[in-house]
Amino acid sequence: MHRALILAFALLTIALPAAAQPTVYPAVSGKAEARTLTIYSSLDAPLNAPMIAAFQAENPDVAVVYEDMLTGGIYDRIVEETDAGRPTADVAFSSAMDLQVKLANDGYAQESDLAMSAQWPRWANWRNTAYALTFEPAVFVYNKKAFAEAPPPQTRGEFIAYLRDHPEAVSGRVGTYDIERAGVGFLFLARDQDQYSDVWTLVEAMGDAGVKLYSTTSAILERVGDGRFILGYNILGSYAADWATRNPDLGIVLPKDYTTVMSRIGLVPKAAAAPDLGRKYLEFMMSARGQAVLAQDMHIAAINPQVSGPNTMAAMRAEADAPLSPVPVGPGLMVYLDQVKRMRLIDRWNMALRGQ
Image (cartoon, rainbow, N blue to C red; front, side, top):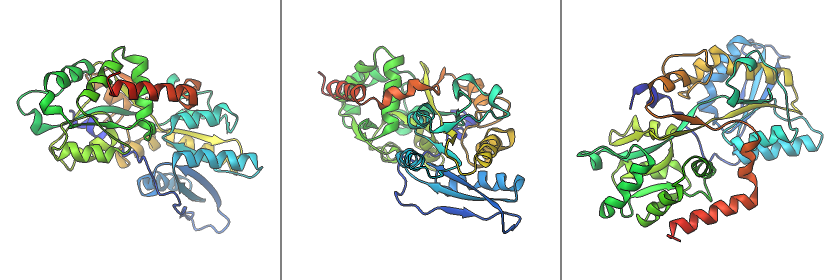
């Protein structure tokens, strides 16, 4: 896999401390009466620190309060504070695409009409309100020692064939997400159902192979890296790339039939205490400078079409052998929040795993 693609993945935290304390960044100017920008984010503070530093370098009179929390906590808090008539965050930045779009669709976010709005990819901008800011693919992972004599599967069809043709090698040694506990796993399976006609054949093949299910990416990568597992399916490339830099036995494949790409979404809440600061920060994140910080310092793939070079959407599309299929930002994401449809998909998943 090209180095540019390896670097293009970001560390995506699936679970964060439930009661993390806010991180406060005083105004660089030291101005006592500095205004304060409040950010709710699912990315933990140390990983986001380069963005804050770059923003404050251009806005020295702005202090920042950064609160990292679970994605569901971001949604619940914005709704609760807004409904109670209290001010809420000035910016919400979350990996829960469905919940972010629901905030926007239900009137809890405001139009921003930023300088980059018209130039942003259409699939990544919903009504100038909710913006996809990153470009993060899902991948196959494999143990390189297990595939020393032959290449690993490159497509879902090849994945199915390998599981069926090597029953002893794969038995109990394949991992993927538990879609009932891992939101990203549910999102990826839902996209598979929309794009891959043989998805249930694939799930049945994994069930026959005794697939192991996990709620965290690290649990799968640890086992693939040390050889207990030989394959992982639909794994967040962000975590995979991070692990691969430290474990030479962990390999990564962008599926050549199609590669699903998820994004973190940024928006300005309707009840923001300082919406002008929220728009300024969101605009900075979308700017060439902010996206360069994202790509180079935070190691998250930049989406700005004007930004090129390693770790950008443009570079990934130029170098990838696979069609990259980003999840569009829009009301279609909310289908994953419909509890009836959700349970139908989960039930179908469980039946396929049992071969029914």
